[in-house]
Image (cartoon, rainbow, N blue to C red; front, side, top):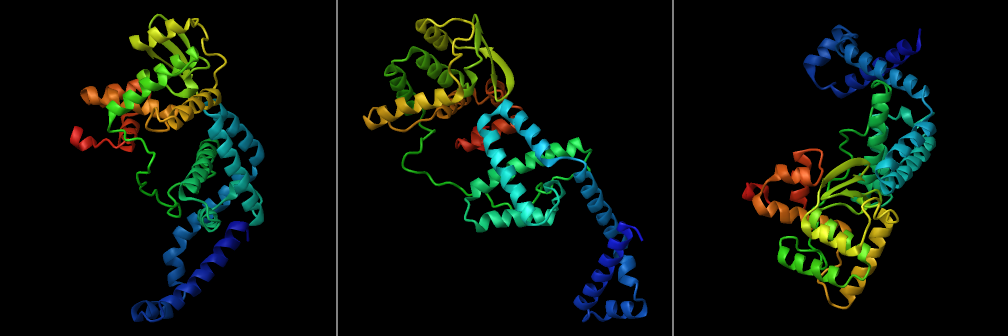
Length: 340
C-alpha cells in the first residue's frame, strides 16, 4: 500500500469507530451500521480521500521550497514598501518558525489549519494584545498568500478565514485623542505648529502633509515640476498637483526642484516632527500631541467635508479602491450614511 492508501485506511477506520460511538443512541443509523459495517466508510470516503490528497500534496510542495530563503525574499520585497512593516513581518516569521520547530514540523510551510489555529491560541495564552496578534498573523498571512501564488496553490494559506483570530475591539476615546470632528481646532493647531517651526524644510513638509495629505515617507524621493510633484509612497510611484499654500512654503524655504528633501527619510521626518510637537504641547500652545499621520487625517477630513466626493478623495489619497477610502473615513469617525 502507498502512503495515501495507508493514511486513508487508518483515518477511515478511526472515523468509523468514532462515529459508531457517537451515534450509538441513534437507532436508525445504528441499525444501518449493524447491517453493513462499511456504511459510514462509504458515506465519508470521498471527502476524506480528497482531504488526504490535499494534505499530502501540501507536504510534498512544502518540501520543494526552502522556508528561510522564501522568507528572506518576501521580506526584501516588503522593505520596498515599508521598513517598519518588514521588521514586524520578520519577527512574526521567526517566531512562527521557532513554534513549528517545537511542534516537530519539518518545515513551517507544512502548516495545517488546525496548527494555525493552535498557534494563534498560543499567542493569546502568552498575554499578547489582540491588535499585536492581528498584526502578527497579518504578516504570516501575507507571506502564505505569496507562497500560494508561487506554488500554484499547492501550499495553502491556513491563516485565511481562521476564527481563532481575536476580534477588533472598539476603542474608547482617550484624554489626548484628537477630536477629528473639530476641524477648526485642528487647523488652528496646525497653523500654530507651522508658525513655531524654525526649520524651513520641515515647515514645508508640514504644509504638504496637512494641505496635500502626503505621508511622512513621501519626501525622500520627491521632486517638483511647476505645481506637479513626483515621488514614491509605500513602494508606489505617485504624482499630483500641489495647492498654492504648499508651493509658497517650498518657495520661501528656497528648496531646489530636484530632491529637495533627499536627507529626510521617514524616521527623520517623524522624529523631528514629534520633537517639535512635544515642546509645543508641553508649553500649552497646542491641544494635542499630533503625529505626522494626523496631518493626513486633517487633509482627508477637510477635502471630504468640502463636497462629500469620496471618489475624488480616493484619488487624492492614492488609495487602491473606494472601499479603502470608505474604511479610512469610517476610522476617522465619518458616518458615510449621514453624509451620503
